[in-house]
Each structure stands twice: as C-alpha cells, then as structure tokens.
Image (cartoon, rainbow, N blue to C red; front, side, top):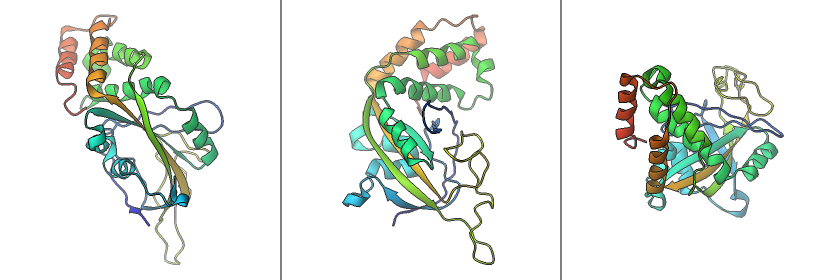
Length: 250
C-alpha cells in the first residue's frame, strides 16, 4: 500500500475556477507549479487501473512528491513544459464528467495564463502597482490567446483515505486542525473550512507543450501587448526585467 505524508506548500499561488454542470470543481494551479497540498497523512486506497493489476505511473508519483516541475525532469518531457490540471472532491461521477469534458485546445489558455501570471507575481506583493497596466493586459492576452501545440498526454485518478489523529479513546478526530483550505472552492458536498471527509478523489490531467513553440508564442504576445493607460517608466523597466529572464525558474 502506497503511503504519502503531509508535504508543505511553498511559494505557490492558487488560482480557483469552476465549471458549469453537475458538481463543483476545484482547479489548483500553482506557481512552481508546486506539490499538491495535503492537509493530513493519507493512504491511496484505489486508483485508475488498480482493479486490472496496473500500477501508478511515474509521472503521478513524481507530481505528488515534486509537482509539475518534477515531471518536467522525466526524459519523455525534457523538451516540453508540463501543465497539470488537478481537480478533487468527493463526487466521483462529477469529477469524471469534468475529466471527459476537458479539452487541451480549449482549456490550455487558462493553464498557461495562470502559470505566466504567477511568474510575474513571484516575489512581487502588488503586481498591479509594480507593472501597471502591463500586468492586466498580459493576463488578458494570455488567457484569450489561441495557443497551439498543447497536447493532453495522460490522465489519472486516485482515492485518498486520510489518517486522522485519534483522541485518548482511540476515536479519529478529523476536526482537529485538518480542514479544507478555505482559499479553494469547496468540492461537491463540502464547505470550505469544514472537517475533511474520510475519503476524497483526486483527478489529474497531464498537458504538455514544446518549450520552443511555447516561448515563441509567448514572445509574440509580449510584442503585441498594448497596455492602456501606458505604464510608467519604472513599471516598464520592471516588466522588462522579468521578460528578459522569464524562463529562469518558469
């Protein structure tokens, strides 16, 4: 039985969205992009393909331990950027509908924009002040762009069973500090800040794009930005500093 323990969530930014239709969905898009936050130790009870004797793919194991940046170290993706769309909750059917409805062509702009925005936000407490109208124009342009070349490589799901602490009588105490992150939209049937359910489902979709092709498209967006009103001289300098070393740590 695979066992994973609580991993700290460092230097990440969370961006939350939802889809229409049955069930509420949580998207966790991190700056790093980082390791999925787990509020308690857990055991993986079930996963895609287990019933047929399959194992957990390497990219899933690495993502759970090191985030999407770790997945990019695999030989299969060394020349590609990895974007992970992650959804979790207690309604398997709703999550599966989200999985089936995901489109790399239609959903990649959201993934790309979140990661690009987070790159500009990293270490900058007030990006609107730091970059002026350039920042808003960039977020709008990257989310509205018709990105090409993104591929849906794989998907996977797993079921977590949380190991809650026990009281003196041996009873589990899921409300002892282990609550859902209140910054996230509540999964189906739960409310932010409420005690975690005993079991939750996590769905992952692995999307990649050629690094050179991605950089070419992003540079085109940079060149065609028309911030309004024009940023100040200092704001332009701040934006140019990030653009010049944008892919360092991206």
